[in-house]
Image 1: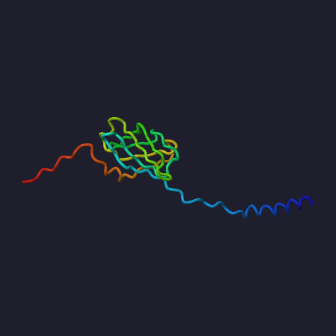
Image 2: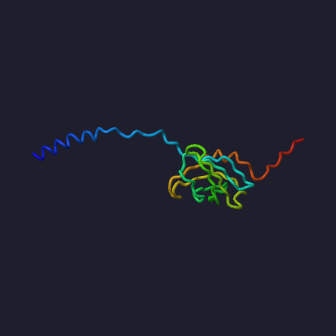
Image 3: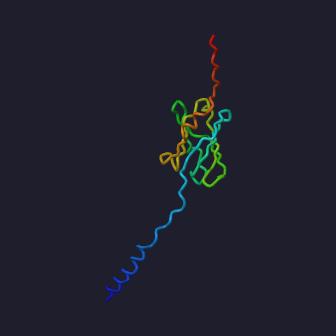
Length: 142
């Protein structure tokens, strides 16, 4: 008799649990992105914008720059402001002394650790960088 009662209880409760509605997802999550807004070689600063990145300001050693020689180096400091829109934060990164002499070609933000996932700034944002040396004016031909 007890087995029949337990079986009846399982048949009544289990379908109710299995039929429960799945949790509704919230709005689409914002895809994380890293954008370079300005490069000031005289001040050795790079202003970036994080979209949908980490909730807290990232540490300076998680930003890795790459120069035209293929050398990688980290930012000296990172000063991030409060988010000015939901999930959008602006940061000012300081380049190490001497590294402003070479053209920057890449920037990565390592999420969590240096071996984990990373965000990469588009290479096209570095092509608009002003050169450190003024180019020579072309000579007029006779």
